[in-house]
Image 1 (cartoon, helix red, strand yellow):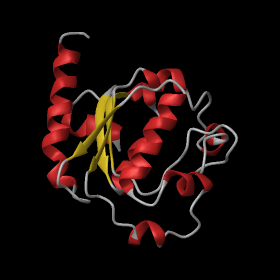
Image 2 (image 1 turned 90 degrees about the vertical axis):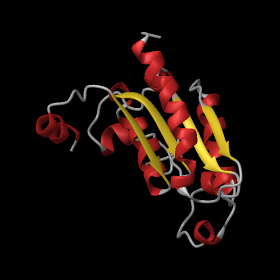
Image 3 (image 1 turned 180 degrees about the vertical axis):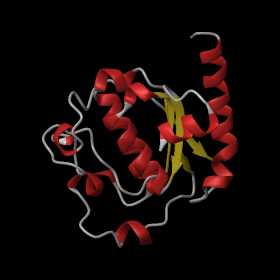
Length: 169
């Protein structure tokens, strides 16, 4: 899909910025495990389901077998992931538990992480930082599970990344 966009619009896609919210946040953090070298920066918004950076657990609970599942030798590459600027973003009031409680077969990590998206994103941030992947956490005041209302914080963060990248930082 990315290569198709490059051909259609004649844009460079060797490295790009990626953001996703809710199910999109689930996608983005999982994409990061697979293709960190393609990413200039990622913003992971309020994922409900989590994949832990655990080398003892199978995909999608952990990442021990992702190189086989996706036929990608050398993944996950936590050192490469550590080079990608990461923002975790969630609304301060994103504490509803109905959807998370209705999930079929939560993983042991999801149970450990908590029942709210705020708790889960904090857990994922700590888990990544424990293996050397730095990140920023943006908790948007007064906002629930609403990606649109989180956009201004994402735009500020992304704007700083673009300036840093343009300056070669």
